[in-house]
Amino acid sequence: MITKRVAIFCAVLMAICLSPNLAAAQNLKLAVHSAILMDMTTGRVLFAQNPNAPIQPASITKVLTLYLADEAIRDGRVRPGDPVKISRKAERTGGSKMFVEAGSDILLEELLKGVAVVSANDASVAVAEHIGGSVEKFVARMNRTARALGMKQSVFKNPNGLPAKGQVTTAKDMLILAREYLQRFPEALDIHSQQYFTYRDITRHNRNVLLARYPNADGLKTGWVRKAGYHIVATAKRGETRLIAVVMGAKTPAIRARETEKLLDEGFRLVGEREG
Image (cartoon, rainbow, N blue to C red; front, side, top):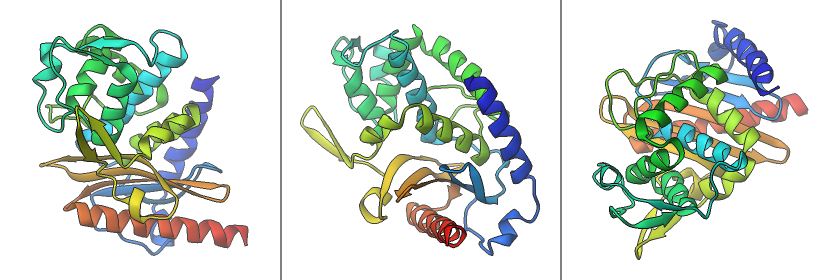
């Protein structure tokens, strides 16, 4: 049932994204590499700018990691209260971190908060090892799932989005993932909407500044790598309308936030005009 629904959605989405007049019809040009906006309530794509342009995914890769974790929990293969043994590999993972220690046991639910809220690369590795048995097996599952969801231009090499040769996605593919994630696991927003996370008496903030400054924003995930720039998968809900915006390749965090707010504003305006 899920596969059939996803296939129908992807076919419609591709047809819309290939329309040369879609972005021009909204009279909007964003200062980013690529972007796409959907009214999740109806499934209608409201805006697209280079949606099929390949780019490194950075930390928005973690949306897929969290999707697989929530799927494993729902299937009963793991539980949120499972103690996860931290490996040396997880401890040594660079970039943004929870600063987990090898040999320690940390509850899976705490690791998932670290992944979602502070983009912890070390926690992502620990989650992958716990659910997949190894990072390599988990990444293989990531790519199988991406293909099943219709993410035809995406290849993942790790569970956290750290730079890796051949790791690539598109704004359209990330929209496909975000929509399915929120449809299957809407409760995930309880974590994604958290602005702070504390572990070992260290409190760090969520880099999604829209949570604090854009009305009704409640997710989803930011990312950055030097060669690709600043990304975000953002979502906000007003009334019965939930929008999903994917913005990729902004030059600075400020531009990322500004252009995403501009896109969401346009989306809610369009939905309001249609409903009016």
